[in-house]
Image (cartoon, rainbow, N blue to C red):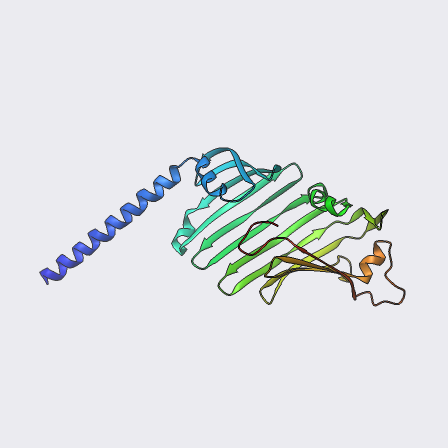
Length: 258
């Protein structure tokens, strides 16, 4: 009996020592200045974190990517997530053209990213300008959730656009039209994320976007959308039929941008 008590006592002391070391390490990390996170962001080509304030567990900084201002990001690590063997954080990015917030969690074999927010069309137009497209209106990100695990990529959530004036160039001519409000639903098919966009009023298909495992984005445009944009495809075409498909490589798997 005495021997059992001695073993039990040593075990308790050992566990206490381990918890003590873990607590000290956690405290040391928590007290590290926010600028320490720059060591991690420096590994991402083009990503810049500047004027960081606060601590590593709770701080804020200016965020930029390849010279483009992305706004002020704030973050706060959720200690409770550590009990589930996850590193979880609440985050928010505030910019003059958008405000987006959400959570992120990295655990054993899985990573989750969630977001919600409001985005002014001006922010989207910075990306669309390379395709000679300009939109008015506001975008709403609702319940975006992306999960990467050993079983593939899961995606859900909605993206709403208020609709409005749309200016675009096609075959050297500039077109100016007004498009209706739209709703895009994020889906995952065969472990490949995609976006299905329909009219907000009656859920009629307009376009679909799919991202494959090789980093290619494939966009399919229906005859209905070409008609709404002022360029009917052909008389008598089924409005739901995809009549234009465009593909562009966004990244190389395991590498940088192309």
